Length: 171
Image (cartoon, rainbow, N blue to C red; front, side):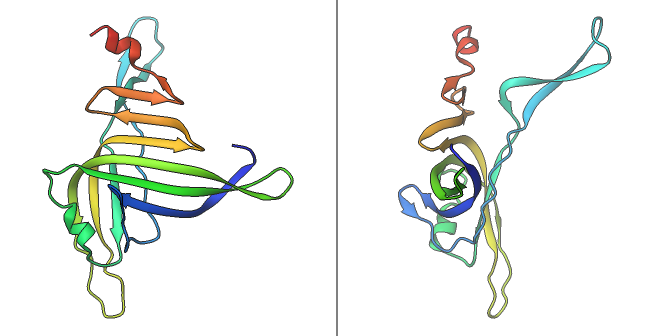
């Protein structure tokens, strides 16, 4: 990416191939917190919290809605996998002071973990939401895969490199 990324200029959220309308203006993406084991003993001064490569804790993504929609209720069945794609453009200030745009795509798959009913207020948004427990996430920037984690198939890639290829070959 050339220049200084400054903001998300525009974005859309899709469920399968359909745009999800009625969402609020903000969707929080999940954190990547590595699972770890504390090691200590001879040759180590104290303790080290050692991350396990490719192993991450629970990842959640909440999709907020302004009011009840068919899309929100269609994601409630915990027996169904929900496929979400977020596509956006990152606004970039170039070295000459101009503006450019870089594409961003986030793909997630997961199951409904919870439903927040929201509130009912005359003239106000309900602020209901669906929370997904993610089993898959892929983040692309400018058409290049930056991170891909598929918890059910043992895949962890960074910048297109398969980080767990050697570990999988030994199993």
